[in-house]
Image 1: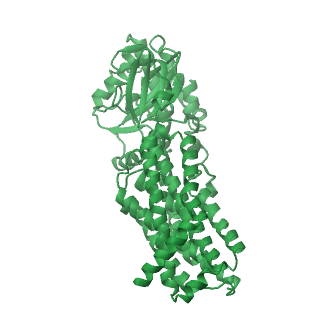
Image 2 (image 1 turned 120 degrees about the vertical axis):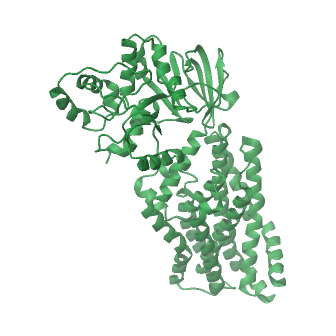
Length: 561
């Protein structure tokens, strides 16, 4: 034990004199931190600030492992420093253990410093599980230093080490998800990234730091890191060389594959199960929903009949934070993305209180929920659908794996079907043509033309479209129902209230109103629907739980198949 402690102390003194180690351990991560924080507007969201900290921690782990251990070990051998250790005398194991421990000692203050900057410089919440984060980060830096030591063991010169280290470092830097989101990569590159060790490091750190999960949730990554550490240390001891004159064969570089084996196995599992990509989607959704948004100079339909002709609304961490009447502050003063609403109306997300998601049987529920969201319907109540399938869908919606309208169940009065003429007119509308699956309208219109005429039911107090029955397309029917309510004598304000606050009260959900603390489910339309109810179809923006929905890309995943 005395030998190990002595080697640690000596290595620590040498490290403190090495400017390269200090640069990659402290200065380099800080440069990336401030760059990423500025680009991501980290001050707008605690989740985004956490994600920036997580990304820079990954840079620190990579730099510490490949440059702090790998290149440093080769440099010491090339400059004959290791020869002096041999004379001491000592063996390879205490020396390599000292390098691992000193690298960890170098990493911990840097990591703590980054967390403190995030907390006090960008209002990042304290990590929910600091000890778990500490354990995972410690294991990560030790495992990646073991990778660096393996590289040092199989190269014969500083030039070789620089080439091999860059071949590892750069792909791990750019394909980890820390610099470029994995979900934005081409599909083939997403699949390849699942075999990159740093991608699993990124997944584990974000699960613990950003999403507040336990160490058990990163169990596969923990096992892979432990195996990498053990394999890397064992092989480094076996392949260790004291002097630069000692050369290894070129085939020795294949030992690098051994230290990568745990992550290659984990990548094969994720490639089959798609867990890595699913987790990446969840993380991205969490970050998007944590953004701070400020609607300015907009008309507000509150949901209870009250209208603010000119005001603003602040969204923070997925919920409505504050309502402004009259003048609205500048976005910079509240660290928010500003959304100008002059001439527009902001309403609570619409609620369709009666749909049949499982009908017709030839399409997936996922796309139908995307269609509702495209049309500004952020909540639907489902009738006569498979409860097991709905529970799975609700779970995927809650975790962020799936983007679509919120689904609730219940109720005993199924909506009545609409007439063929009603459906035909709906399908001819622009919103239906935008939201319909490919080929649906062309196939449906000839069928509807052959059906006999019938009367439509009188509109209910709530908006229950019965979408899914008799070729009634999912999504845009709610807007047709609003128009029918007005045609039957209700005011536009009453119709809008039926599709927002009244429906939310009936379903007992904390949505349907523009009130502080309520979910930020919002629809921004061009014009004033209180004067012309058809304005609800002129949708400018949809927000779901604080996330600005990219309506134009909602159907890409489904319609490309």
